[in-house]
View: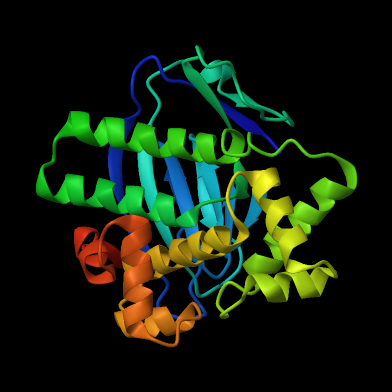
Length: 287
């Protein structure tokens, strides 16, 4: 996979942004010449898109950064939803794209970031909030400096999620595998009322061992981690859907709306309704 090498001595230049919802299953991305960069964040379905003759399938929960100049076009129909933003890069394009490079964290003093052209987004909820902030800034203020720094911050957030968020984990071998398996298990069951005792039973350990192991491995208790993942999903649903708050609580495993609201406020400092209202406006585009 190619990597993009962005030097950020000065901010990126924001052009425009929005959210797209395909009208039906027969929609195919338009054919056009792409004259600036486009970041696409998939929230539903798959997107079939090409740069000249290079075809990409971008799955739900992934991003892609398409580079100019190219003939951008769809090559297969799909009913999908995604956030997008266009921006220009003020630096030299000659060393921007590195073919088949392996991205990695850079020294703290670096003023550049390395991003794969396409990858899975670790924290989709944070990216959605930032993209909606960009939309709100553009709609309400049209302050070019604010927009430029906001879109630059979005790419920095993506870089941080990919390479700077896992420093607490220092395990090796079997312990690393057990930790990964627990995290995956919670991801699979995040919409259910999963308990620590059920996680322990599934992996064949007692509850005390699993609790101690997870806290030592990650720096956070297993119970708190489960709740954190649920609240991440809740934030994404609050900002990206019009589902009632009570329905969202039910969808992530809470049988009581009062308990969901209390848990959400404990994690975020806001009620679910206040959080939604903070990021309520979306710029929707249908074709």
